[in-house]
Image (tube, rainbow, N blue to C red):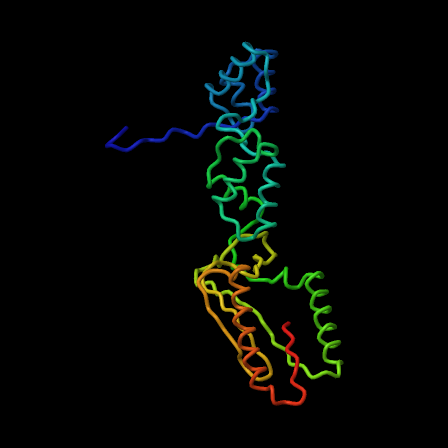
Length: 263
């Protein structure tokens, strides 16, 4: 230490295995001094470096450098890192804390992991080129083959009813939920692939509107706090039936009153 500043020494020389063998040959087999042996190799080595090489050879009969060791070893194997990446691929909106909880709860793939930090998980995802991205809402369930078949059956049923000669009026009943809470807008996925998240039919229990309309206009609508369960839906249909019956009584003077069909 001089004047409060640390003076660095010369950097430690990294000697290859070939140069180490040459130095040992000069000293042990040819009887050169350590200084002379250090001056004959390229680059020139200090006497202390040559002495250290010769001392290790005489004590352990080793001429090769030891592999680099030290520090903590790998916590996660390649299979475990791949399992973490698969979690993100299956659910692009998953959080780091959720990944950590899943890892700690898994006693099969992560049986040897009893504690893992969020920083380690983030480093694993970065290693496998998984980055934070904008989430795009994609209605996977709505576009499935099963839902398409149900839509086709619905259209065929309506067309069969329309083909009947008896007069009828369709009453369309449907409910929709409105989630006022904020949703996650950013997620992760592999570089080159868009981060997506599934859009469920009902994402929360905030406000639900159930309404019935026909060709004559709106018949009944009821907003409620929370989802429409069986009891609430039956109460809505009971009130709708009362509206329809009153309408039929007003149309009793008609020669052929229409039949109301709820779809």
